[in-house]
Amino acid sequence: MDIRPEVFVAMSFDSTYQTRFEQVIQPAVKSVKMDGIHLKARRVDLSKSGDSILSEIADGVAHCAVFFADVSTVGTDKATGKPYRNGNVMYEVGLALACRNPEEVLILRDDQDQLLFDLSTIPHVRVDFTDHAAAKTEIHDAIVDRLTERKVLNDARVEIAASSVTDSELNIIKGLGHHPSGTVWSIGHSLPGVAAIERLLDKKLIKAVASFVGKRAAYEWTPLGSVVAQRIKSIPDFTSEDSNEEPDPIPE
Image (cartoon, rainbow, N blue to C red; front, side, top):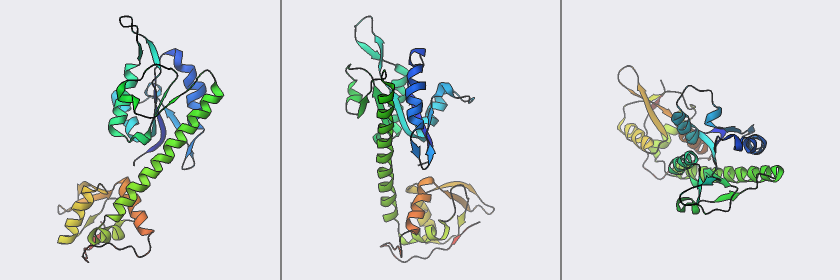
């Protein structure tokens, strides 16, 4: 859930496709807001970072609000006579489908050619990039649809996590849930508290980051954990069905 207001764009870098990026894709992305912020189209070739391209791709795919791929055919194979798609783009699509939910992936193309079997079941949009106004509208609406589906998915994820907490986990969340991501804290050595910490780690609601003086483990909330904590705090008299354990959270 550590997401930036970006749309990661995978497409051919050939100059032939630069116009569709500058006049259609980029303005369509910018026309969409997420949490009041205009989205930004990110292509690795436009980045000025010193990191390797593969590192930038991995970072962009992992943290973008929506992964966008233009998989339009780029040529015809001389040996088979069959059309083919950009190999680098297909690599990035495979990476996105491996680590992101389908609801966060948007695939577009401008051709009528047969898709690879691996992509044939993934929802995609066929766009006529020669009609700039219509294409921008279609891409805008498709991104909004993906963001809406992603929100529903994340809301369900938060509700499931919130409903699964035990009393001992709940005590830690109530005692320390007000700390934002990035704030490091610890708890006492009570057995119920230690067991609750292990469960919170398993659920990816917290992560271990260091240790304090005296070798006490230090933790911080994950982005998901922060959202779950806020959700639990918003439920009046929230209780779980576990035993009434009383660990003693102690921020440091």
